[in-house]
Image 1 (spheres, one colour):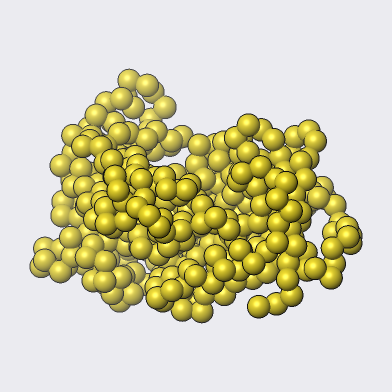
Image 2: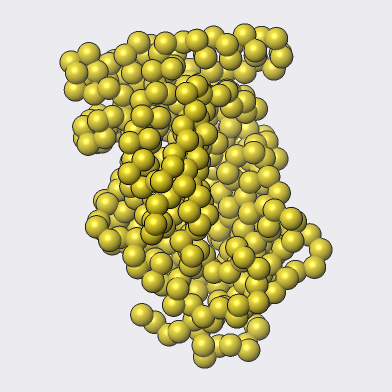
Length: 410
């Protein structure tokens, strides 16, 4: 391991803009009014074999625990490793311990943790805390889809054929839309708009990967564990009466309930062996977002001793049927052969973990990969028996609105 790292945490006065701290190239994780933002690299932790390699998560905890902290910060404040991991579990991955990390806690207090090599302790020349130089915003945009609607719906029909043959129970098929702008697209601006539009979602920016995920993969604090899988999507109309009718229709739909149950059964089977207690509601609830409603189930549990770390839990759970399908191996093989899409971090785990093993990870959906003038936007749908190709296409268009509203500002 490289030179010993020293962490020092101090409380910051006043209010802090996490987006401004992250800047264009940093790291942002925010929900409602709390979260964290990091800049710079104190250490990069490589997972050469991805999450799928046995023992892959151990170097992350070892690296975090090797950092010497001053011990004066409150619980929950200190160095973290964070990032966006690939959808494909065996792809090489990495997490970053930021050189500077600002955390805003639930009580509104803000703390800054600086992580430096031992030889640099006392050197405070890290530049300004927040980025305050605005960029000219793009005002010209071109949208295109690498695959036509007919090509993509043909893939959905192929998926339904595989399901009819008994090869799959569910498979999640994604599509891509490319936005090209006349100027560089600001990740910071996109994240800021997403947070304004979807404050209850997990808004993230990890380098050029930005999004607002409504789906919690896993949250671990001590022995407490929580997951909130989603499956089943209907549009919102903006009219309260009509929206209530649509939600009731979704709740009573055999197809939507089946799609959701597949995900819940998988999560229950993965978590139960790790828990002393696991509480899974018999019925899902309805999660309402700005433009859609989802079926959601809030799962809570108490982990058995010794509790696996948050990243261990991620490795055991990912990919869930919410983003891949079931049976998992067969769904992944089918996607590799038929989806015609390089997902990268789309639908992979995104989040953080600290030295105690606590952490919070969402699924990297409602997301885009931004590079210069170009953004690749992604949306996926769960295909089960009874799915209709035209409705699945419409669902992707509905989901893409979340990113388009934050990105395309003519």
